[in-house]
Image 1 (cartoon, rainbow, N blue to C red):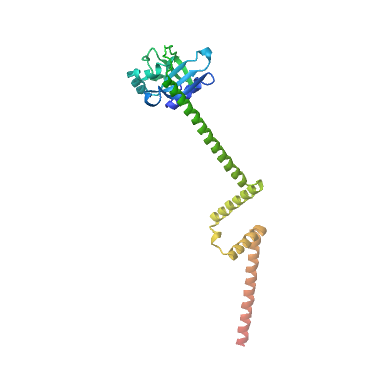
Image 2: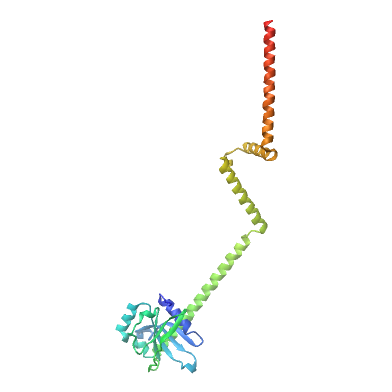
Length: 261
């Protein structure tokens, strides 16, 4: 079974259950204004269809068993408002908050599928005629709600304008597909260089330009001719050096022979 942890969640479910145009719901309505203010109820709602009686109903919200029990100990404190209402409801965040101790004159609203459902219908009371002080309190709260909506709408418009401006800037900075491909190639090249450095122990950033070019020539020759070609040239050079050495030895021996004669 769904539950609500905060009064704000219960209030949102209440507005969903008693939604316009059939109802109007206002939060935190007092019994009067100025010096006449004695008590505030969590919500006042009014049926707006004549077929439903245009009733004025009060709602007290509770999200804990302890808070509910404190309300039961002093039910008279809500009387300055309830006396003007056709019904009085208790809306709870969890059905387990109320057991078998709900007063007979109270209705009960409990969580149900993201909204509220009637667990016990609130009986019809015999209300006093609405006083001007109570009407003034309702009108003040309605005016505050309208002003609050206007402020929220203005803030929303400002935020949306700022977001659109930032999105435009981001779109202007966005790379073309060609630029994205070039960036991808650079990243792949950087990864290959890093792998070569890791495997070879060579760090290019420590080399002089000439050394880098020399190393590139060696790598290029290996890549183009293969290791066998490099070894073949090396063997030829060794053979040539050995032949030159042999000729030098022969020349030295002839010179010694001539000196001996």
